[in-house]
Length: 112
Length: 114
Image (tube, rainbow over all chains, first blue to last red; front, side, top):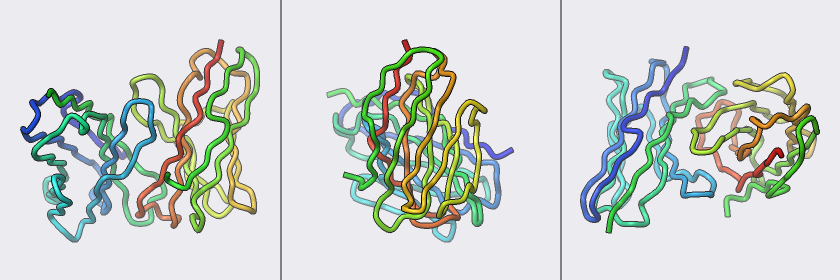
């Protein structure tokens, strides 16, 4: 069945360093890949997304890369700040699909 | 503010009881999704509605049911509640039915079963 694997489950970095979270999906028809950030006790919020017709997308300190051949995509956060500490979820959707498949989440700690 | 409204914010009840969670989607959104998030766990997809019709089902228990009304608000009904049903329940909405659009989440309803 459809599956999205996310690694690592926990990531601890020093403030100012980069953080990378990786996801692998199983459904080759997937074509939309959003990333959500969830702070403690709050709702998930979309931070960036990418569609299968592009390989990379950037928004300030955040970037997402997509490798369709390998069926994996990654979130890159540069110059991390303490406020980046949260749980990050990747997800995958496909054309005509009605169900978003979420990864299990990565808990990011940014140490000041 | 995502524009998605969930009520109530908190709900405390006992085992065996029944509760109803309510969600109003963003203006213009036709799809509503329900998710369950247990403590320190991921987002478990329960069910999706589009314009009043059920479109996709996830790991939703038979004790749970949902519907979307003509005004597009949705309700999630949980019955014969068990301790393990204690969780944060999120509603999300999106514009389309095919799920290729961002989902906008409400602030959730925290359900505690005593």
